[in-house]
Amino acid sequence: MNRYLKLVNFEFNRFFKLYIVLVFVTIIMQIFAVILESRRYVREAEKIIYGEMMSKAVFFKNYEPFTMARIVQSNWFYWPIALCIVVLLIYVFFIWYRDWLGKNSFIYRLLMLPTARLNLYLAKATAILIFVFGLVALQFLLFPIEIQIMKWIVPAEFRVDLPMKEYTNFIYLSAILPGSIIDFFIFYGMGIVAVFVTFTAILFERCYRLKGIIFGGFYGLVSVGFFLTPLLIDSFLLKNYFFPVELFVMEVIAGTIVLIGAVWIGNYLLKYKIRV
Amino acid sequence: MKGLITQGGIPMIEVKNVTKKFGRKEVLKGVSFTAEKGQITCLIGINGVGKTTIMQAIMSLIPINSGEILIDGRKLTKDSYEKITFIPDTITMLPQMRIGDAFAFMADFYQSWNQKRAEELLEFFKLEETERISELSKGNTAKVNMLLGLALDVDYLLMDEPFSGIDIFSREEIANVFTSHLIEDRGVIITTHEINDIEHLIDKVVLIDNGVVLQEFNVEEVREKDGKSVMDVMREVYEK
Image 1 (cartoon, helix red, strand yellow):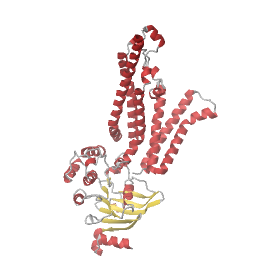
Image 2 (cartoon, one colour):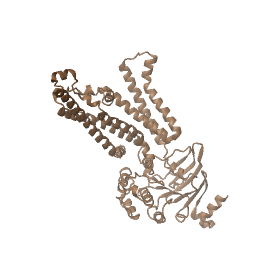
Image 3 (cartoon, rainbow over the protein chains, first blue to last red):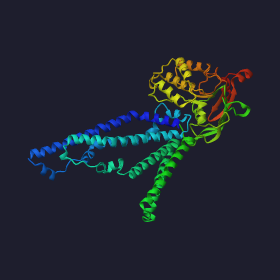
């Protein structure tokens, strides 16, 4: 346990600099998006009201009020989110390959640590999850700040203050910040299983190299297939026989089995089949 | 040290009939030899005969196809890494680390890390803790690599080509390590394709060619009985 935590700390520190860059890029770009969109709206509103001598009552009749929804749809707002997602997706692979690549083969050291090799696997997975949930938490923390900035710029009469659920309902945001606790567990539960399955597929490649790509790909397909089995059987064979809650329970069980399978196979590969 | 459970009670590394294939190529074809604690055993053979593969197999860094490897009569487990270590021919620390960071890493993970000895070795090799690994010369990188292995209080040390590509002064310094208290009482397996540097240091030779052990002999015994040097035996064996 102790060495596992030390490994988590070590893996965290290895990515920390880049992570801080991601955090700052997100903060700066999103706040920039808030200021840009808010000021643009106020400027346009004033131009119409004062330029065309339109009364505010007529303006509100003809034009939409300003909401956070307008901000979250702006490029400046979602580009940093996309950047974080892409970087973390790449890092799911790089967190393993960086130990083999380069002229200093750090994988020798890692595999020769006097601790269960499974700890390497779990520590890397934990680090990835910390990074993901850290960024999700950052987004949650940023929203109130962004709303406050928006309120400072856009006068109350020009805006409608929506509850957060209303503007996180866009496709991309609803995937990152699901509307309900259940959705949150479903999305991130699936995400966690996907990270573990990817890790094990990577280990197949690291153990068997070229052949391992095929093994890893096949293993990934079997895992996805197994996970989807309850849904597929229900849709195609049983013609929607189960209640959604029953399907949900079956999916949780299938996901848990896939997760345990990924860790078990990963452990086996690291213990008996891995090569430097 | 605990666990002297071998035939005859001598602590040793036993490599028994080990085979290893990479794809269709059989790199090890039933390799067997022993390396006793307190002795320096040298695996000799030209490049590509499987010397490094044997070391990696002993450390469980590659899977073997058949055979068995025992350390003091037991198969390698995670705890064995407190008892045996491997110094590959490239450094196994992150390039951005300073030597001091590497020490901290080792101290964090190994109970067998001996900080006092590490500092002693640092002085012996004339290195500074503040030096960054990526900025070290080739010779100094090899020294740090060796230092990280030698500063562990382990029974067995495996060294892969510690002299390859290193300047003459660094070679001398590294060779001096073998005659010092740093090696005494430990079991050492060293690979080389150039015997000249270390002929006077080694106790036992395992000649390997094409994945098989051609001969295993005690240097002192051969010298005393037959009046032959390691080179003489090598000439005989390889010319057959």
